Amino acid sequence: MNNNPEENENQEDKPNASSIVEKIQQLGQSNIPQAPDSNIHVLSIIGQVEGHIQLPPQNKTTKYEHLLPQLIAIEQNPKIEGLIILLNTVGGDVEAGLALAEMIASISKPTVSIVLGGGHSIGVPIAVATDYSFIVPTATMTIHPVRLTGLVIGVPQTFEYLDKMQERVIQFVVQHSNIKEEKFKDLMFAKGNLTRDIGTNVVGKDAVEYGLIDQVGGVKDAMSKLTAFIGTNNGAEGGVIQ
Amino acid sequence: MILYTPLAQHDIFPVEQGGFSNVEHIAYDGRMIYAIKTKDGSYQIQQLVSTDPQDYLRKEFSPGSILS
Image (cartoon, rainbow over all chains, first blue to last red; front, side):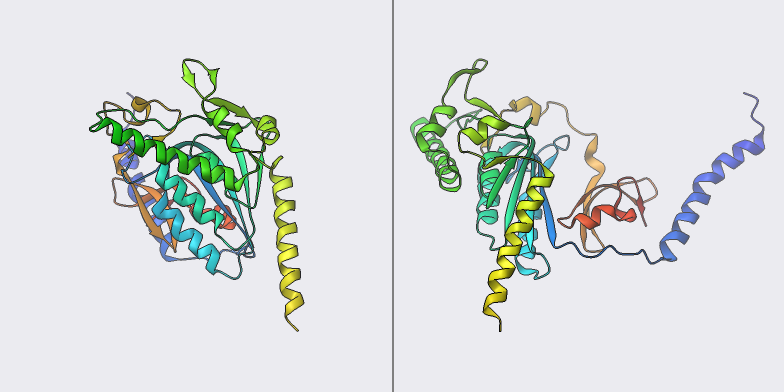
């Protein structure tokens, strides 16, 4: 400890000085050159899809109360011409996931999704909700039955409720992708693919083979597909306006 | 609430909690931001929630930068 008192004082001054500098920076707002507005917006579905109960904070979550208004804003803003959905999710709340999927499916503007890393469970309906879906070769999608843990009051009723909930997920996926209902159910209830569990882990190319996802590809493919969609949209509009 | 995920229950709901409790979501310049409230009352950006890809290129929204 050879620090002299002066140095200690300096150290104490530092936080103060830096906070003053910060305040000056905040008040003296400089104009930042703005990039031109992007006509393509990006929505990332990350971590857990959060439902009505706020998950503990160590979970990275996608909150529907943030995303649903953004989707409305995208629909409403005439400057936005297309939407890319980036997925790296482990699934989550069924109803929040279906809500997001239905919102994406009912947007009038062209939408494209890319599954990166993982698009598991409730990520599957979100991925297929777009006009065209991509999956990178290394991404996976786990398809498994909807489950419930914890205390169950009224077993037959709960079973029926769960079964209907699962049916909603299956119907949505079948309606918005090229996979057959039989095939999707086969994958969902397959044994031996996930150790000690029922379901299938579908990797990039297989997802396309099953008809779940439209194409294997990344950013380049997704962007060119979206610009092509936007082009045909604009072309159609241009034809009407005289 | 029914969670449809391959994760185990205890991964999502750990026994002991706390730690990240100072993270708040706030609106700044019309954008939704997750920020950590620092000791001096200012906010440090942790995550930006926006659909505009250009927002992510803006310096003031980069993770770690401090708001007033």
